[in-house]
Structures are given as structure tokens and as C-alpha cells.
Image 1 (cartoon, rainbow, N blue to C red):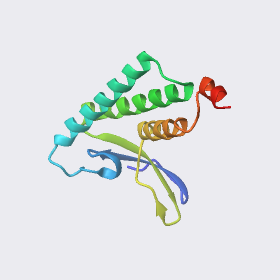
Image 2: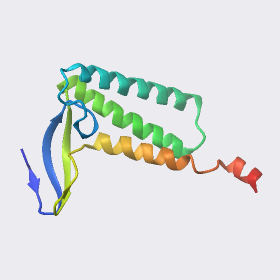
Image 3: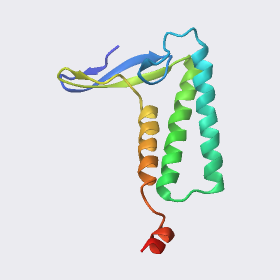
Image 4: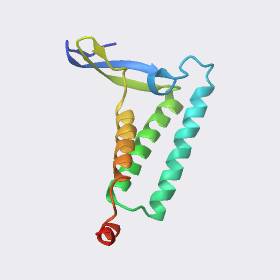
Length: 130
């Protein structure tokens, strides 16, 4: 069911994805629902434990929180519906990106910021390096 469609840009859609990114394992026999839910809960638990112990910077904290929020959002969909609801669909001309949701944006954005944070020095180490 498409709610809004433009020739270039954004299409609101409703897709149930029982698999992972790019519908990986979508046509498996159903075990993937429990597997991906368990992975999301495990990663969230590890990151929350790391947050509780303290992290090196605000960027790392924001990255962890973003990843946890996205992972738990997808876990909630999987537990409630058996699949993740994807509703954002971007395209430009003949180029088309598979549908995704806000939780996916949070996980990917958090991973990108976490990667970027690995290239920065904490303030006290930076003073020692100079």
C-alpha cells in the first residue's frame, strides 16, 4: 500500500521484512525471527552494560544509544508482528534503494558515528600526543 509517491525521492510504503538487511534470510522457515530478536537483545544488552560502565566520549555514548534504540525498535516489531515494518523507500530515476525504517537509520547512523569516533583522540590523550 503506497501512501505518497513522487517521481524522484521518497515513497511511503508498507513492507513486512521477516529477514535482516536487504531481506537477508527473508525466505527462511521462521527461525530467523527468534535469531534476529536474540541478536538485537544481546547487542543491546552489551552496549547498555558498556554505557553503564562508562564510555570515552559523548560521540560514543550517542552512537551506543542510537544503535540500542534502533535494535530494540526492530526487536519490538519482530516480537509483535514476526517481521520488521519498513516504510521508507528512496529512489531517483532508475536508482532505487530497498525499503527501510527509522530503526535502520538509527543503527546505521550509530555505527557510522562509532566508526568516526575511533579516529578521534580523547582530549587528555590529545594533549599528551602534542
